[in-house]
Length: 123
Image (cartoon, rainbow, N blue to C red; front, side, top):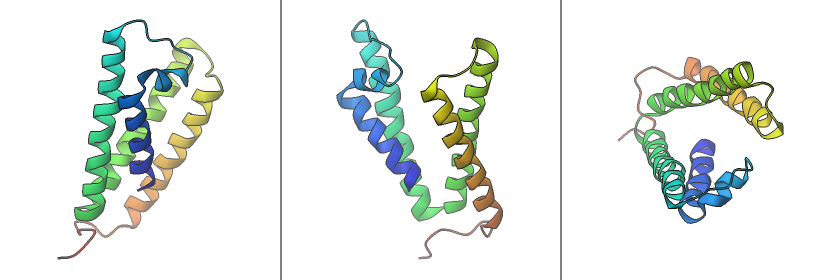
């Protein structure tokens, strides 16, 4: 639910203030297509992820944890690739690399401890 809450907050920011999302990485949106793209990716896709995380928390916790392991792991991998290809990350990227790596590790530990093929809530 921490991940769902995080995605929800960024999603709402993406819908209502795409520039605020991009201000986090000091990028100025130049036109309405740029605003539309940020609104779609951070707003629309972020809200879809939020809805699915809540659904999985209720109906299939194991599937939700697997999804989050992939999500956080690939986010971390994308930052590592950037670090390798374009050079060291700034404070924002480094902070998120640590967060994503910790969430990935926590997800893997949780996944290993979960009973397999059991719904989160019975009934």
